[in-house]
Length: 445
Image (cartoon, rainbow, N blue to C red; front, side, top):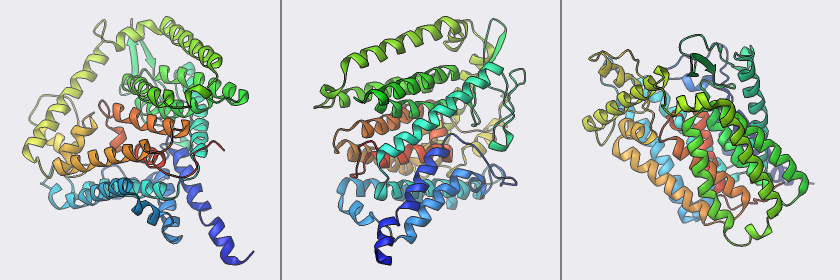
């Protein structure tokens, strides 16, 4: 075979390997030794997933931008890509007006824009040359398995496993600052996995659970057994996180996916008896969890007035009020990408709140405060065009699962900021949306 033929045949392999490596790295917080500190220009470069994304983008550029011409010919996906790229450009431009003195940092703005820009380019690569969606589904399911097992062990031991080399945080429910649920005087550790908060672990678990549905609904008996087992494993782990936003996101994503599954011939091909059996087992699982953990469920629901839950709600209200104030001060341009915590710190010095600056737990408010109305419109346009591009494709379980993952993260973004602020979930949110809109092969491998 001529050398050029080898090149054309295998040039996409390192790109596809990079894409799959990024999806495998979503539930991993690992930062390199000596990595730049938070709120610095090069902070994002300390993450393993940043270099996996950069590897993917770099190989795509070296390969000559394969698939880009096809993307440009698709009107809807072209508008999607344009909205994302303009959003990244606007974020970089916000360094011009983002610095306002002591309580803002131009290097923080540039660093946040760099992180977002790499995630946007990564999503663009997926839109051009995504691997088969079946491989992405399998990678997410594998992540669901090992993260669920890790969650079980952390919860059972009520401490960390000492996996510092992998980025695991020190977990002691008796210490302040560790995320717990509390009821009847008992402090119960919520599992973190290899991420900095249980809510963030839950965010990955819902993506993995929705991916597992592809195998749960498969006609092949072996895949159905494996898929159902993995799904139940992940469901229990998700419940153990006690993440209300993730629970809601997962439920809404299920309702989002249901009409797509019922449409056309797809539902008629499903084995109804297996579906009923799996549904019954899921209901029993939910009932068993409620029976075992009902005091903590009542606490999370606000019954009993536990101080931990009341403080969480109060803090979120404070940051939401700060976000509205920022929007009123700079409605068009915003405060600059990544500058919300610094501006919030400025507001806090005039209050009696024992808080430090951190992002508001609502993605739309956060984007509006940091990037103004222009940035919010570009983000909304990218979501609309991305969803439209995916829904125009053939009805396929793989595509539905990825779209449901996007829908789940949109719902989570109404209550948490990590889909917008963390590189892992920037890659997940926009990478899933890009993959769902690709015209390539979508059958399981």
